[in-house]
Length: 365
Ligand SMILES: NC(=O)c1ccc[n+]([C@@H]2O[C@H](COP(=O)([O-])OP(=O)(O)OC[C@H]3O[C@@H](n4cnc5c(N)ncnc54)[C@H](OP(=O)(O)O)[C@@H]3O)[C@@H](O)[C@H]2O)c1
Image (cartoon, rainbow, N blue to C red; front, side, top):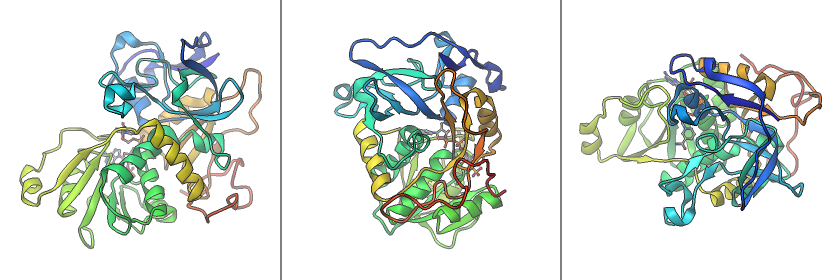
């Protein structure tokens, strides 16, 4: 089968270790099944793997990719939960199993025509979501769901600040938070990205580091070092930072004095459970939320997607369409128009602007 793998680690030039080529089909052990992958989405996790963060070199080569949507052996449309862990070993939460891993860390990942996963890791794909949309849910959207609805402690109507608006997790926080009734503020380094954030449902968007009109209840952090001081300064007394990532570095000054003096909480968050993924899928269906897709590329053009993510040239998720052997792509690479990720009216199929889907459009700059 055709696959995209991490063949070598290179901390400075992650693309140097990225390889595409044929690998043997996976063998599913007892209790596991083989899923035929239709679409898989790219996460910063895949870039970290190529840089050697979170994986020892002796696990390579390994097929990259945490997220997939596809068909189970009976032909059912499914979403793959990426966390390979035992809920019993984690007090009912597989993400707390000390031995848990994500697909592509210990077991081969989803950038392939087939992936083997434990049967319990399959969640039904809602009919309303395309395979490309469903493939965005297991990492970025599940992480955002847990940050918002489990870890933030914030009720709808309160104000949340999303740092670094353009990323996969950040755009998920904006569309899910808006749909759930939070007042969503966002920061981004780019003017065009700030405008897109508002189109998606952010109430206001600010330059990175800007003084805000008032302090917020919760800050959602994925950026880390570059935004940490601003996050701490932007909170009301008693407020909370929920952090799931540190793309720009993980050792900023801790701002300890301000944290204790204003009685802030810092809460870590990682992925979510299989059951939460099922609820997230239903939430997307019920609230007519669609994941924000920057572009869809055929899997054999994965390198272009990785390069865009490394350069920060994206808004939302990069998705790889996975074709069966011998199939020809319907279209060349697609860059999505604003409809993708729009929070749409409740009920029915979303209206599509003429030619917006599966036509080779470019996003506004
Ligand atoms: N704990 C978990 O379970 C979990 C799950 C998913 C992701 N993560 C982590 O969360 C982070 C984001 O993941 P992702 O997949 O959403 O990544 P992504 O799509 O590549 O997004 C990158 C984001 O980083 C911001 N950024 C990068 N460098 C920056 C800098 N120097 N200054 C300011 N902003 C910067 C960008 O904001 P702009 O809008 O300003 O360009 C953008 O929002 C990664 O570190 C990832 O490993 C963790």
